[in-house]
Image (cartoon, rainbow, N blue to C red; front, side):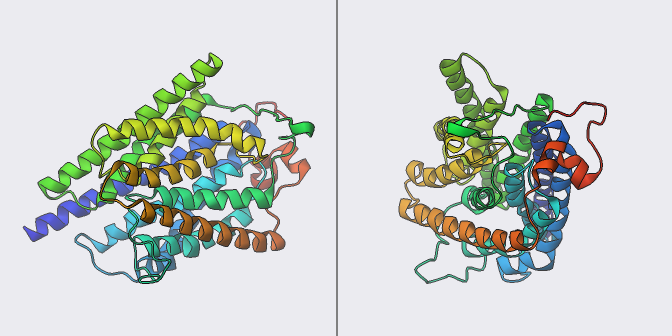
Amino acid sequence: MGDTKYIIDTLFMLFAMVLIIFMVPGFAMLEAGLVRTKNVTAVLTVNTLIYAVASITFLLGGYSFAFGGWGNASYSLWAAFLFQMAFVGKTVNIMSGGVSERTKIIPLMFFTVIMAGLIYPAVVNVTWGANFLKGSFLDISSIHDLAGSTVIHSTGAWALLAAILVIGPRKGRYGKNGAIKVIPASNIPLVVLGAMILWIGWFGFNGGSVGTISSKESADIVALTILNTNTAGLAGAIIAALFMYIRYKLLDITMILNGALGGLVAITAGADLYDIYSPIAIGAIGGILVILAVPFFDKLRIDDPVGALSVHLVNGIWGTLAVALFVDKVSFASQLKGVIVVAIFAFVSSYIFLKIINAVITFRASDDEQVEGLDVSECGVEAYPEFKRAF
């Protein structure tokens, strides 16, 4: 019986890991569709390298830092590592999309090493892992964050905010007197494909975080977690569509999809604890927050081409706090403390490392390189060479 449980849980974690890795092309397609055609190859290259560099870095040291070594689990140690490894690149994926179209690849890879080897493992250490802050005033291990509304999504988004402040907006994005130049998505089918792949991957993201499926009770929790995850995404998409239609008489598919993704981020912290109806409210609020946050960040001249801050930062915070609002046994103070501690650490450490890297190798592509497109200057391969590039 012991071997059977071990085998079933190992298979479950490997399957969940595959679903999470499936989110790599999801991020790639979403971002490729949202940027201009002259920057698509650069975006795809960044996403591919993030997966490779972050994963190797986590193998060489990040995992041990996060969990205090390679201790045994109730399933294969190698499956445990692979599942956690699948998460690490997502923090940089969140960041890379938000600074696309003006960021060079090499310095971004240097930051990827720092995020995968230090910043993200430190956040994991004090929440899910070994906890070097245990017993101190800053101890946040009591936070309930099933699959990382704060640990993953907010951490990556705080790094993104720091990066935008260091790198600045795209050339021509903001004009004088508060003028905002709208840069439309280049490939809507890719945006839809990417978002739907992410949605499917989220079932492994949240469902796998339950950690076991080898008993009737745990199987029910996994199924409930996946059900609640999907429900929040549905609610986010529907409310975003309704909000856009009521306000603008238009159904903007990019905002509908971001509404869905906002709902998915929001449910990630507590999908295992909710009844089957609470995710409707949590996801709907997440969808509304995305729609309100996008113009808010633009007014602050914070240039985020894919809306990552609106999806991952705003709803990472909302989702973490929502657990305490909808579940009696979870402390609001503990959830809020976790949000604040991670926010300060992730933003400050990211900003410092980004400034150091930027002083050595400039992150920002020159104005001429941005006009020509990063496909040419960074990769030498254009995604759509037969198209006339839009300047």
